Length: 262
Image 1: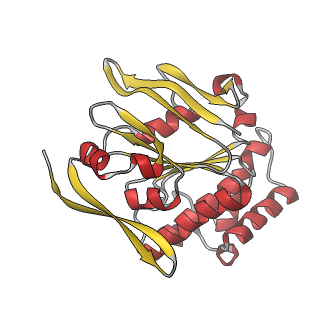
Image 2 (image 1 turned 90 degrees about the horizontal axis):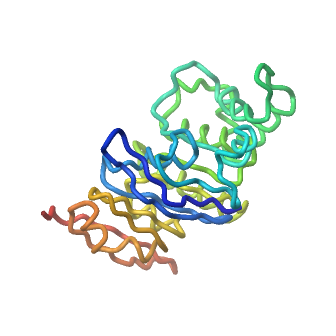
Image 3 (image 1 turned 60 degrees about the vertical axis):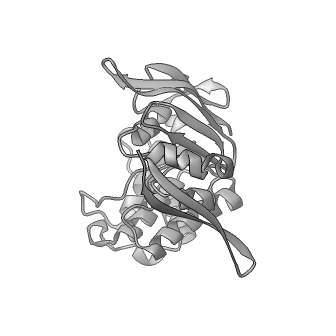
């Protein structure tokens, strides 16, 4: 599957937030979206999925404008994982995950045996079956984020769209989320678009990166080429140092913010 945004532009009244955005993602690729607060990263995710309508430009799925695809068909291919900021309702983990099957159900249909089996299988795949009966209101941020990803997987999507999946989590849970996204990409060929505040995380898991700048410009390309010291300085007004770390036969990227620049 190929997902592409062509000339995507969005704004309110006379103020443009996103202007002529272009990128594409193929099967199994991970695209990280970076940029300072207020540049429209979450807005971009909503526009690309059709939750907000582009002022100009289109989102394409295998060459077809997504506005021409029936919503039910679209949401069987694309799954959205929002920020895990707590659950408003007292659902158990199993019930929350089963809600992901809504794209396969009719308007007034209730989940059946097949839907619960799909939810159980997704929880098993994510290693969170032990949370089956735990209320979402009683979960940690990491637990809830894993539940939301499992919910997305119940429809066997071709692409995940994740909004800051590792934010507000400790180091361990951040790594669990990152390794989960990477494994889904490598083992299942699921592509992902990930909105993140962490350049190191983008370098760790991404094939591609899109940087949104405050002046309305953007940069898109291979992650290791786009995420460099110069581009980070321009985007965040922060001088950074990027270093390769070699440990136990593996290479890691460290991105260190040094000082503010004007």
